[in-house]
Image (cartoon, rainbow, N blue to C red; front, side):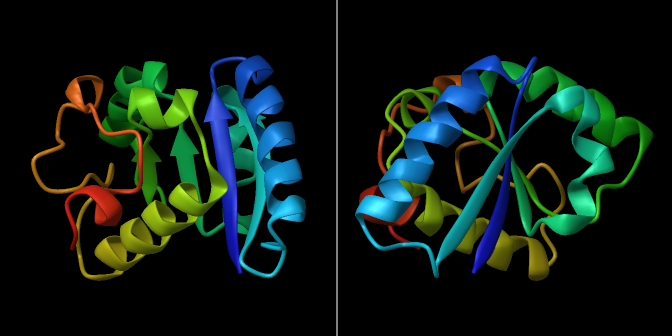
Length: 135
């Protein structure tokens, strides 16, 4: 099971999305594949050791970079592309999380991004990377 910490600025949008995703997990019988919890970015480091990956809303991109200049984070951080964030489907999130975790364990540095997706705000895909580009 992948334990996902979903972060946004104040927790408002991520809490709504996490609730919607939790329903998606239950509806599609994905409880054994993923658990998701939301947190405001400002307190996410207090919880980080209980999770496998931190995924952040696109508007946190600059804050993630600032954080990583100051300290190392012991799990992969993935800033969601805007279209995926707006259309979150748990199946796609799980696929991206699996791939991001593998990339992290293979030595890629935080924040983790897929090839040619360094600028998160320019990413146009709305599905998991492997569905669109393949790995």
